[in-house]
Length: 338
Image 1 (cartoon, one colour):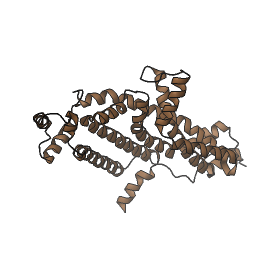
Image 2: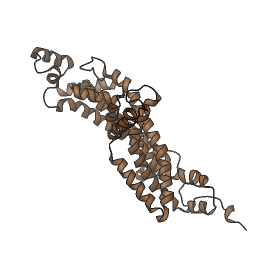
Image 3: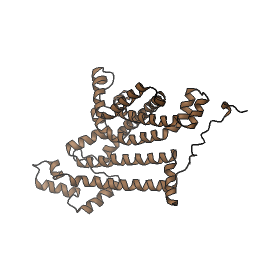
Image 4: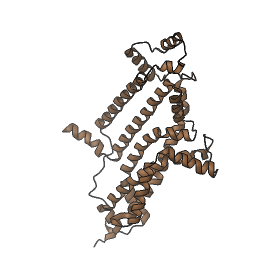
């Protein structure tokens, strides 16, 4: 006679997952990315022409001679018809030529090359920290509050994570700067001077995403705890580490990792103010300087780069989600067959 411990630990009610994306799924998302990038290029081009007044006059000052303004406009091709200007702009963007800074006379592509790695380092580290902190926190909160237990824990978790999400990243940055850099003098207050200089800006960027991902991880974990395969695993009296790390955690990660990937795109753009709080040499500092100095070619390029980064990250998240959860990939094939 077989016993309970002899029963294989399976989850017959869970569908077998596909391992390959359908070509239609990939093509559809690739087309969506291409269309979104095209719209972004149009929007970045239109930005200069929608600014009230004359950008060149604002740059050169109200006392600049008209001959100088006209000469500069002809040099930049701003007196050409709009379709011609747009065609030149698209040609230059495709060639990697994003113009020249009005103030430093430095190619904008060089400014982006210098600042982009530092911005991506902050965003990637913040995402990694958020995932590593939030997933265990969310799983712990779910286990403690499962089936109505731990009312106080649930109230504290939802209150604290809700408050953490509501506070902007730059306010976290200011608070961390005042306490740990200027007050306790434990960490460098500004600049990129070594590993210690990453701590405060990465922490400021990761607090809100940690709270969001933890809330998602708790919801997903609560759902998985009520499944048949988890009840069977609990009945087997498996060690806690095996129960949660081997059987529970892999099945809660799809939605959680998807949210983490989407938050990465938000952290790239959200780092603008945090970089300025800590004088971080990334794209954020360049963007604020360009806006305050009315350096329109730099500001235009920053909009293009930030938008493209977010779109590419979202595209990659969709592809990874299709690999982890083939329902999203198979739906395209089902729609085609129907």
